[in-house]
Image (cartoon, rainbow, N blue to C red; front, side, top):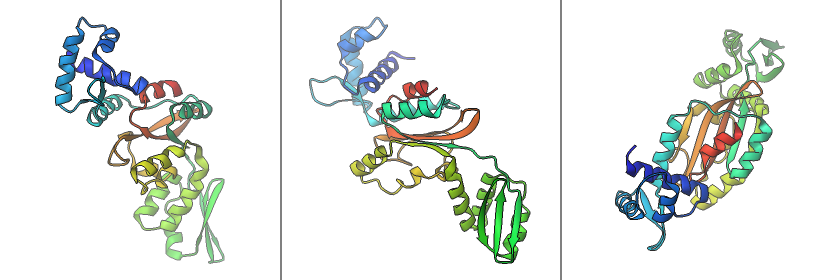
Length: 261
């Protein structure tokens, strides 16, 4: 790693801890590197010229720009395959501490076990100990019987592909019971209020969100500038789960991940 990269990463890490500018002398004292404050200031100027660091005013230290934060978090999360969660209660506590919105949904391995025709009036779609009801349709009955043995997530996916949107909605409602944590919704509303970004607020609180997101970190393709979101599979109490978190990009997500594990 070059000296410039070391300085940049050090500025970002200090900024994530304190959300405050850092000066060259302060950074020198924190770096285990034989480099003078004047040399650090030279790198500060180069990084500022490149749009990576910025000053809030002339006499202040430096903070990372949005470009720098995005690049930093992309690199950090590229190295993460999964996020561990020790318990739902621990996650709830740390979500409040870090002021981050999170939703945790246990994955359901229920399988489609039976299709019951109720007097040619209704179809009872049975997923082991849970069920949903549709209006009777002979073609739908025949089609769904061909899916017996499929797990509930696969049936939902197929229902979308073939246009059975009523079944998809009812399965989603069924799966809402699997959301074991939804905390700090006010982060979503503050984000919407400050940015005018209202279009995805409801989807961030719905389990269908997990259909569209791969594991990783998300920026402007999902949330407004200044915010970031992460989606990962995890394990809680030996059960597979989906984890979605959203908040300002100046939060220390690496420390958050360490804390919840």
